[in-house]
Length: 202
Image 1 (spheres, rainbow, N blue to C red):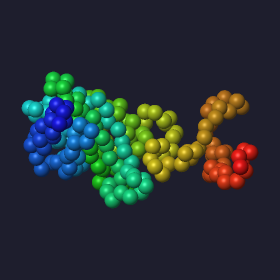
Image 2: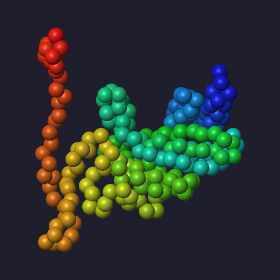
Image 3: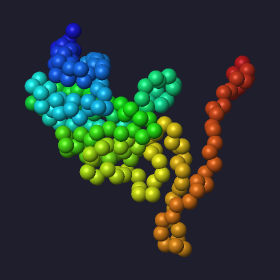
Image 4: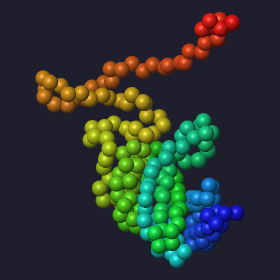
């Protein structure tokens, strides 16, 4: 076992001891520790990971939304929406992935961790914009990548690739307008060539 693998296993044990019953699942894969907690324990687990000795994850380096609705070709028996948070301890030179699932697929809501790591601010806005995950306690939860008139959340697996509306500049009105999509959806099926003498081959 390499030194990195030994460190990952040690970190896993430290995090498991620190979070205790808050841990729903914890594992090491590719020398990376991933810990899953319940939505109700998310905020308190975040504080512990930031402040507890042996953890000291002072820096949030990424937070992203996840949609598991089509995971493994639709074979998924859990909550649909999740958030994965990647944390870094500068002082201890270690990383962890914290994952939490929203309990309501129809209205996914999770606590905001902006009070724990201020860097979560724009990341949570992005997850809200693209996945429709609401972060309770966020001071300014609004769209950040799509425009104000955008309908839906484009990173959801059931969002149509062509969208719901299109926008264009109207020269007569001298402004941008929204209109129904003019592109017809189509399915492109690859052509499979099975001809015996294709390309002059015999």
